[in-house]
Amino acid sequence: MTAIDAGAFPTIARDAAASTAAVPTRLRLTRRGRAVITALVSAPIVAVVLALALSGGEATATSGDVELPVVTVEAGQTLWQLAESVAPTANPADLVADIITLNGLDSAAVMPGQTLVLPERYLD
Image (cartoon, rainbow, N blue to C red; front, top):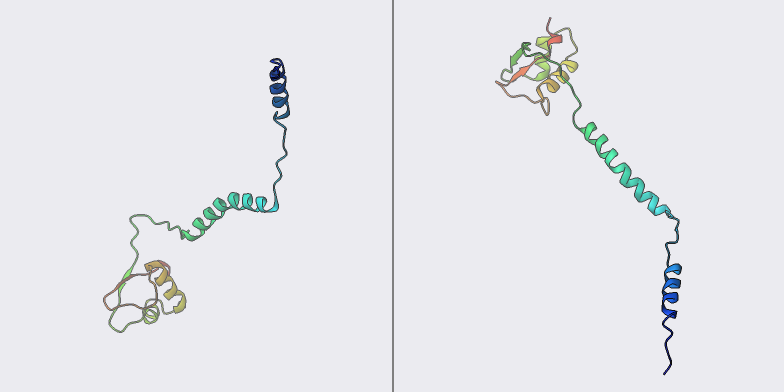
């Protein structure tokens, strides 16, 4: 049997610790890594821009006491005919577009008895 030198172990442990000491490594970002970081940073920005763009963005300033003129659609009447009767000197296409927007209609189709709010600027 060989005798073990008790003093050799601390030296080995110290040498092992010295060789595994924290070596400063340089972070290398690959092209794929840069693309991932760019996507992660820009995704919230794009989401906010899209949300603002799709939120409608129309602001209507009205006071509570202003009452807009209202008309009731008669049987067989179209928005074009209504526009011509309400404002004969105005362009009917512009008035029809404004009526659709003001009333939140999906199309120019109207039903008899339906009440529509008219834009005030066409009424003189």
